[in-house]
Image (cartoon, rainbow, N blue to C red; front, top):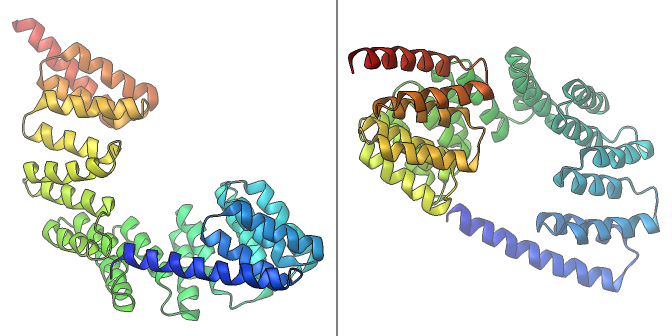
Length: 358
């Protein structure tokens, strides 16, 4: 059974559960637990309006029902209303200062706001409530990963794994840290361990493929990403990595076919457009490459890599002045973009020689 089938079954089960609790709340409209479960099911079904209505009905019955405030906070969190979510989580914490789940939820909102110190304080408060709270260690690990304090990140992820040796998300985060540290063999072992725990973990296969990719083991990377299609037949990320590997194996035409499959699913996929452009450049099809980079810039006018690559393609087409304009555009977006600086200097030198002998 693939992920799409499993997700469909999950939705069917959630709908059945929703109908069951709707019936229960009709029989007993003052039952706070029924209303709370109904709200949570609505969240799973992405019916946030009805979820909020359920949680607010609870608060009309009992203003001290902490879970309802947390439910409202979670809805706000999913809507990216981070400050509003914090307000509701804090209301839950006023009722129960040791409500560890609410402390972690506050930390998530602060993380979304890039207020990492505040998030760390919230996660530590959760650990003051429960020193064995797996999710708090995991979230601390993610924060320290984001701030590139990899030593502390690994320490906290290991604590989460000590508490739950089959915690797949912690394994994935740990493996990605080893990729960032360029310790690819360690990353490979981590992702293989994750796959042993769950042979259907798509993220583990993709990241295992990346670990091989970074080592130049492109055939192994392709096999890992092909495995993803058993569970998710239209996974764009796996297709991208297969295309990248094929390009690096000198199979540009096949890579272009793969990237084109992505564009059939998602016509504005910038990564696919950029990578097709790179493969076309390698095939000497500079006009077609320019078209792809121009499409990227229609989607995102501030995409510096597209300007840089477009400039390179224009050099090959002997359009030196135009290429210099494109490199300047890239440098307007990022004045420290060293690749564009070097390419601009190269374009100027080639243009000077060209003018001298033309």
